[in-house]
Image (tube, rainbow, N blue to C red; front, side):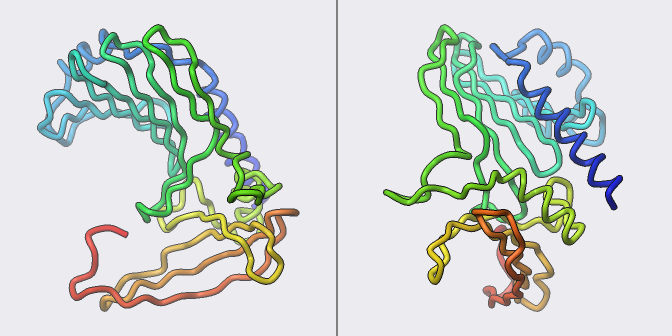
Length: 228
């Protein structure tokens, strides 16, 4: 297990390191070249019947590029459950960069890293460090970094937030008893018979130690939901 954990940490480190290589503009030449080799589905470069969009694999990531002449273009890099979103001005200079941990739940997405916004010349005009934002007014966020929780839960329960397809969401909450700001990592169990079953692991936001885990069951509308 220790070898696997070291390997996962190494892969994550190398991917995050690759993000430090700044993308300054939308690569229209690459987009035009790749779209010539594309097909709607079931090939290495897909369009899904969208002439302004391509999706392809590169190294350990899936990359989506969307080009709109004279409008906002975008690119997304997907590495397991970690995503990096880029937007580009009409002049193709970078407009913004955002990073997320994203599981099955569309309402449980956690923004991570440093969000940056740029002017039309590519100059940074605003930054937000999402791993150091307060939980609420006069309530600081957790002391422990989200990536420490990623490593700790892998060590404790062999639950790999980065690559496990059962990863549902990760949340920050304030404990009603201790007032600590902690983490809740949610794992999808099943949604059979219109019942959503989840398993949540709770971690202390001050020291990163495991607190407890609990199961939950929620009634769904007949036929379930399109997404969570």
